[in-house]
Length: 307
Image (cartoon, rainbow, N blue to C red):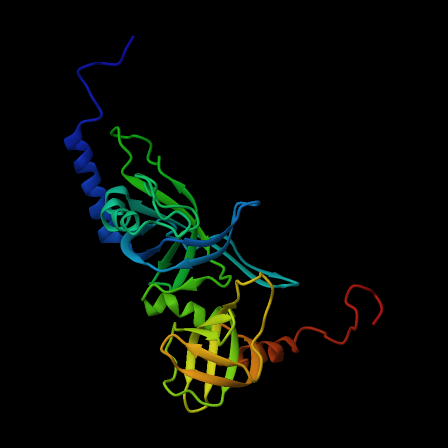
């Protein structure tokens, strides 16, 4: 026997009312977040993996944090190679608000760098690999799974997305969203070079590209200390032949603004989150001093029973 033809679940007015109530509830009890689409600069075609990515745009939208009792996932894991933070979170986003606040802008900008001409409906939903920044906690998460069928056709439609996200691990991506809270991730976590220069007529500005004169080695300016004549660069590389190059004393560098200077000394450094530009190692020193209280570093080979 077929279903009753006099009762229908897909009544458009009821669907709109149901969706309106969901949006209102999220706006009442949710939090504003930034949706950051990933732009793939270079893709490994063998493993189908993004080798180099950048994030140039951020869109504010409201979401409901379903993980009301705290972060999900495995939490903080302490291993022999350091501390891993495996926090996870589940967010609920309105489909209509997604289309209004994000989808139309992402598709109008061409989507990702490796697909400059996106067909219609390419961004019909949030994508795995994109980022969600939560200003409330100051944390950034990567979208791992998008569920677009929960709740399952209660009134004949699907009004929400459920985003299952894990803590984002920075790996030299380029952030130029224009939002300082997001972009400063580079300052504290990107692998950097410190160049001491003889002089610089016009100086350098943040995010400016600096290139070796007569070469292809270049980097992005993180900080310029005019008094000390020190220039800090991140995302350093050359694409001429795929080989590794490094800055050398005596070479000249030039910025996008036309400032030219000669390198007097070069230092490689890894900034620590929370440290100042210039590679302050205060946090590392604090960890080392604290570790001495409960870790024995006297063994010469920790993989054997002999000291």
